[in-house]
Image 1 (cartoon, helix red, strand yellow):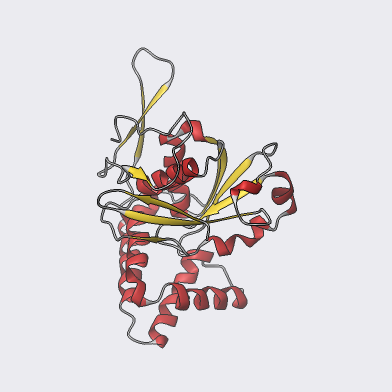
Image 2 (cartoon, rainbow, N blue to C red):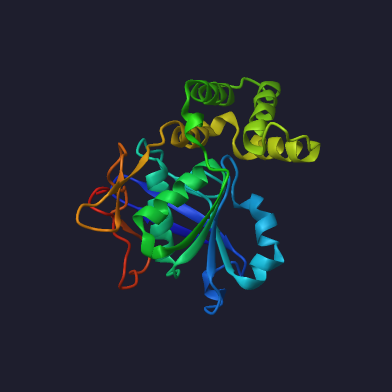
Length: 264
């Protein structure tokens, strides 16, 4: 199975990935084509990227790869209170390094994926050629009404006592994922069916970690560096250490991603 193992003394994750090659591996990539890393939406996984992988313009002109985030899809991980968007960005960097990927274009779809993509570009600029972000969460979404809504969603989802209760909250969650104007009954049924299988209340850890990423997102502050015309970036985050000390795959290429001093 296409997994990348990432581990340290107190943490572990195995990220599942898929590509647009016949054998679903990076060995089939065409070195003459640029590569795109696609990040899936919140509460979903790379299975829901068929429109992107099935687009002839992308499939023919690019090497495509998508990772399931550590609490999504087929990826597995140890529960961690340190998990945030900075950790997700580090996951992608170490996974890309383990697979010896060249610098990639990043296509991020929806909230926590866009947060991860921006931090990936900030921490590892040499690995990111460009960013394409869809549905970036704005600062208004961190207002009290939004936070209260997410907390109620988390409580109702994780504590649903029967199938009827779960389907009720799942239907409300479809408005959060697909938008309040979504009236496609087939899409709504597909989302609810997927969540019943992949994110039932028995997997509340996955639901909680994804929502906590959005609830506890930290700001990225851009400040000018003295005596230089180039901007300096500082990360205002409560988690300042990557959980990865090493990984379980072959040694990396000569140039390896390194966390800036403000992050370590």
